[in-house]
Image (cartoon, rainbow, N blue to C red; front, top):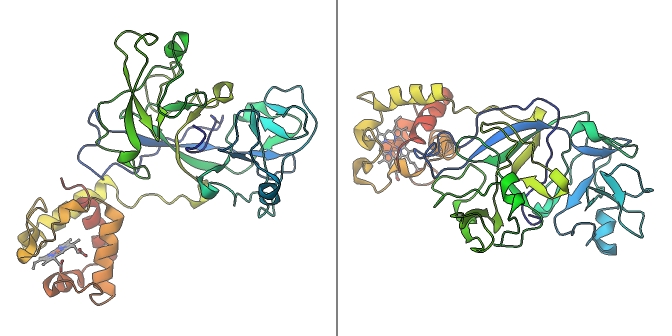
Length: 354
Ligand code: HEC
C-alpha cells in the first residue's frame, strides 16, 4: 500500500477507543455496508536524539527512491548495520531502514517533537512502532499521537499488504488463514476523511483462493484484510507492521494535545432535535425530517449530512449579514441562535436521512 496512507504499528500505549467521526454523518452507519474508523494512541520512531524519522511511500522494500534533489529536503537517516532486525542498512549503503522501509529526516524539523514532515504530499509519513522494539539507533517519541485508522462496521481493524499490486491480491493459501479477506458488496458509508469512491471490489484468483472467496474490497486499489489474532472486537491492531509489510489504513494522525473532542455528541443530537421539532422552530418550514422545501425554496437541508458544514452555514447567516443572499426568513431565524443551539441543531440536522 505504498501509495496510500501511513504505516503504523501497535504501540504498547493503551489503545484509546474514542468514537469516530462518522457517527452522525449518515443513518447507514452500523449497517453491513458501512466502514468505520477508530482512534488509538501511538508513539513514533525517532533517532536517539529524539528527531522524527519518516518513511516514503514511493520507496520499495529495501530500496530508496529519494534522489539527490529529494535528499536536500529529506536527509537520509544513516548509520552502521545493527543486529536488530528492525533496523538494517540498505545493502551497500549506510542508509538505515526500519523493517525494510528506508528512513529519512525532514529538513524543516528543527527540534525534538517537530513532526512537520508528516503526510507531506501524502507520501511522507511518521512511523508508528511498538515501543518494545527500540534498538541502539532509534527511540520512540516521548509525545504521543492520536491516529485514526480504518475498521469494518464493528471496529475490527483492516490492513493492506505491501506485496499486493494495484487491484491484485498476492495473499493465498496459508496467508489467507492469517489474513482473512475483507469483502462487502458496496461501501455505503465511509468514515469521515475517506471517500466512498476510493473503495472498489477486486476479483480473487479462482484457482488459488479459498473456496467461495472470490471477491475482495479494496481501498485505492489495495485489497483489504483482517488479521486473525485481532480478536473479533474493536480496538486491536496486532497486525500492523507484521513482517514490515502489513499496515493499517491510516485516516489521520495528530499530536494528542491537538485533538479536539467532537462537539456533536449524542446528547447534542437529542437537544438539537428538541429545538428543531418544537412547533414554532425549524420544522414548521423544513419539516420534521428536514425534507420539505422551506417556503418553496429548493434547499432541502437533510442533504447536507455534515454537522461542521451546517454549523458554518448557520453561523455565517447569523454573523455575516447574509453573505450568500439567503432567503431573509431564514436569516432572521439564524440571527436569534446561540452558539450552543447552533451546535445542537447541526448535530441533529446532520443525522437526518438524505
Ligand atoms: C420561516 C421559515 C424557516 C424557518 C422557521 C427555518 N428556516 Fe431554515 N431555511 C428557510 C429557507 C427559506 C431556507 C433557504 C434559504 C436559501 O437557500 O436562500 C432555509 C435554509 C436553511 C439552511 C441552509 C442554509 C444554506 O446556507 O444553504 C439551514 C442549515 C437551515 N435553514 C436551518 C434551519 C434551522 C436549524 C432552523 C431552526 C432554528 C430553521 N432553518 C428554521 C426557512 C426557514
